[in-house]
Length: 210
Image 1 (cartoon, rainbow, N blue to C red):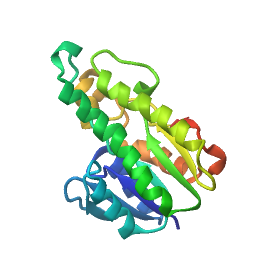
Image 2 (cartoon, rainbow, N blue to C red):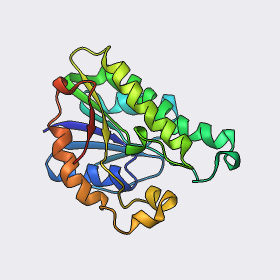
Image 3 (cartoon, helix red, strand yellow):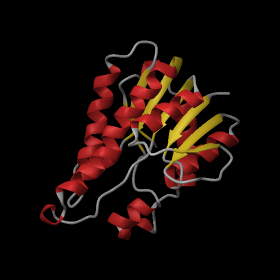
Image 4 (cartoon, rainbow, N blue to C red):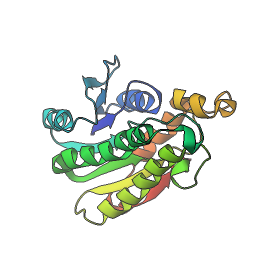
């Protein structure tokens, strides 16, 4: 049994992954900005609140896997219609908060532990109207590779879910692709064993879920 923390478990990929890992008999701790009911341990934590994240990490203690999944997406509009504040909010949640979670949990990671930073295909190729989101996920890729070089005994990878999934985020920015997209539950069937199979030999890797 592995002890696993996942951010952003209120819905979508985070919730489906947490449920699947519980079904596989792992000890899963999830957080979200609101209360969540599920088969996993759940806490109300805003990942942008550094002190709240530190308290959550202290409460959980030693970890085998951390999945930094919490994320938001901007309105898909031309750059001239998106405010500086909206851009900054996406970067804060999707990138700065991930850095904060890494700093909070890294001292808690067991030897051989793995930190998974959820990226996106739009973290490798830009997309019109989504410059804040793309910038945040490009940042995840670069930050993961850079921090991985500092690690010893713990591994860190970025994980592209592998295409659009049937989530509220996809519906908000690309509704034409939403109907035919894979469900988060179908994705979790593949992603859970993939994540469990990662080890420190994968440190620094940019992985795409099949």
